[in-house]
Length: 162
Ligand SMILES: [Fe+2]
Ligand SMILES: [Fe+2]
Image 1 (spheres, rainbow, N blue to C red):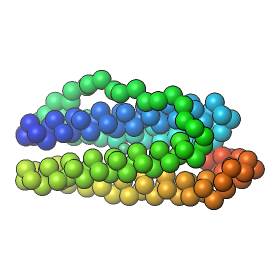
Image 2 (spheres, rainbow, N blue to C red):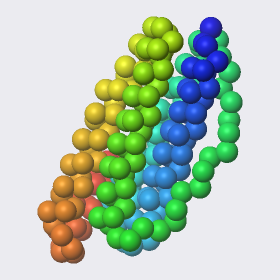
Image 3 (cartoon, rainbow, N blue to C red):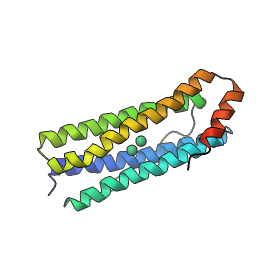
Image 4 (cartoon, rainbow, N blue to C red):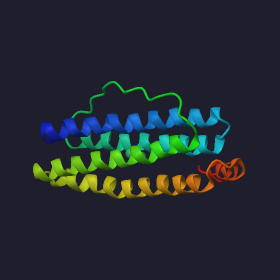
């Protein structure tokens, strides 16, 4: 059985992963609206990954004897001030999520919940990858500055993400 503190914290993380999906869909729509459909595609795929993260935690809560509880998902903003600003927010958001996963791990350690520690290990590793992916793309955007040509070629390469 999950301790109530752990169950509540995991449920909160389901909500935050769903919010991440929502945020990335909002960003996908934003990039589409500024004719950067490759960024839009990349974020659409990213949103799908966040839904998978939410479902992983949802399933674990049930498997471990708890009950997933759905709460309201915060609405993300609709527009950003350019390609670079929006992508800087992707990285900042992933860094914030890493902090949440670390807090969850701290709680599992404090509560001697070995199963949840093992479960969260996957997310600890995943966040390294998430920050790297977002950081690598942001570095490329920053390198190109505001030059339209290179930004469109980056957009074309991001369009390939399936
Ligand atoms: Fe996630
Ligand atoms: Fe993520």
